[in-house]
Length: 417
Image (cartoon, rainbow, N blue to C red; front, side):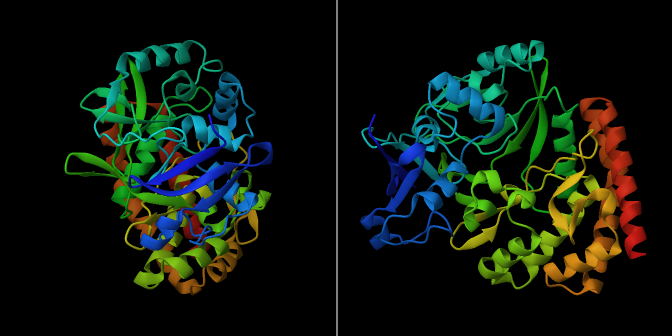
């Protein structure tokens, strides 16, 4: 192995990553890319000839990597430090979020499309082990041939799905098409929770990737289409994207506002600067999503849960990772402050008055957006619960979701009534 990695975008070398102290990385664009493309991999890494400092380089690229227990297990099994960003990218960078593929400099990239390995049986066996001992076994680390990476703390795996069979890519030219998430022992029925919230958002007027519950070997998985992948002439093409933390240059450990990460005001500034090609539409869409997250009780909507597509310009990506955390016995603190508080029980009408100022909208417009969202969700709620129970069977999670959503709608209406 060398101490330099190639960063590939659309089968072309966009730049290189050099190893720095303590596993950090230094990014530099290739001169050919600057001359012929001039497309930045991140708003925080604009095209230029000079190398970028380790801090800003590492902040972007480490945000491509898994977090929490998954990261710890992977590092232990491959014998490198869990803070070693370079080694993670070296081992797991072939298929990342967005269009980037990262491979060692001494390896020739194989761009042959359609090269996949069927892992259906291995997946079932792993899910069996996870069911018996969920603390010991995690989905991503058990798939030992996976050279892929997805950010976040939740256990998940990017895969290629055809019919009822599940595959992993064999090379960098074969992209994944879906993300699967297993049951989590600490969070009851979380696949159904996420599938329900995602579909409720879709029916409430948001751009949301299609998702569903997939049953395999007696196990339930949450499956969502990758919006950063597109089928073109029988080939899966990667579309580049970055999350808000990457775009603003925040490292992964600062994804929460309380730990120095972005709040709603910073997100609004990013949208106004780079996504204002449709006027205020994206800002209003972002505000509406805040209202939706409030109603479903999604208190974990941090800076990494919103993204920008680099697709002939910049676009607000479809929304994702929509889960009601309020149905679980957690601390009910929001990832971003509403007004000046993170706590659900301290939010009042004046909190939304401050929020409206942070988002640069009139308070009356915010009232209108809240009313519209409450009506849309009330209209769809009961029907969607019945459909999910018909398709997947009855479960307590639907009762819990209904209770949280109805309660939060009532609370919001009391603020704006």
